[in-house]
Image (cartoon, rainbow, N blue to C red; front, side, top):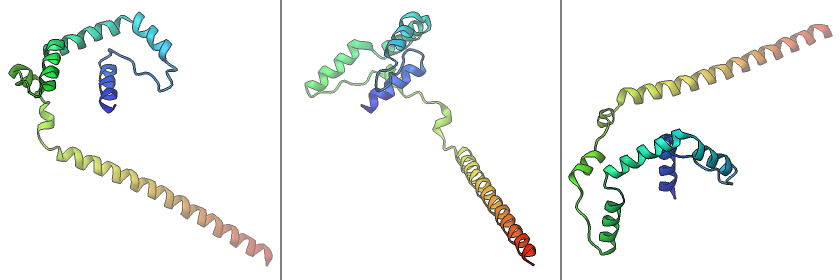
Length: 139
């Protein structure tokens, strides 16, 4: 089920689909949008063309039939190359990004704690001042 949601999310991000609510409350609106908005048709066509470059339906059937027979199809070298194209950013550890993320989180937590302690100190100061005023009035 998770892979279906992932695929649906990818189609949505590509502009080729809409994700329905669990209760289907957006079904009619989404259907109208898909049928009448030409950007969905163009994005769907582009997504389909991309999938066909991986071999399309014939390749998918070849793989499924081979698996049903207990054999495996050798990977197509060209498709394998396409699937292994990775953004160079992800090929190396991103230590700086990780440390910056940690520093930002620690800073946010520190500011929150500082604000809470300042608020508590102000509240304690106000309480002490009020108690002092009451003591002076009693005298």
